[in-house]
Image (cartoon, rainbow, N blue to C red; front, top):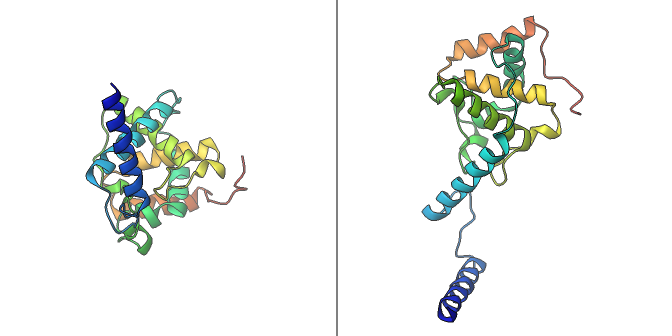
Length: 184
């Protein structure tokens, strides 16, 4: 047992020394080591799932919710997550990890999966994600606005530029805008 503990401590010292020497490149232009990528992905997905699983999802098909989500998404998200018809921006191209492009994702058909995905989107939008450039919009937006964005993101799968523009511009006809006090 002493031998195993000694080997473990020696390995730990070696890892700390290697990382402290700058061996691990933190540049956004360099991908993580494969093992680092897997660990980060596992921790991120486990964390989101654990914190989102008990959220209560409001009805996601409400037109007002969708319109509110469209206006908020259009005001805050396309610079990183893009929108149908929008080419990668300077900011989105320079991010690592690359943010998801929601309109390119496959639609979620299964209702249970849709509920789970909505909970995860809500949690991420509200709380942000460390070391990804995803801000915590819950600091400046209420839960209703965040649920609206989650609902809209779910509807974006394979949305055409014309559908996106029509939905975003129809919000002006319904007196929806992104102006608010940015407080809870």
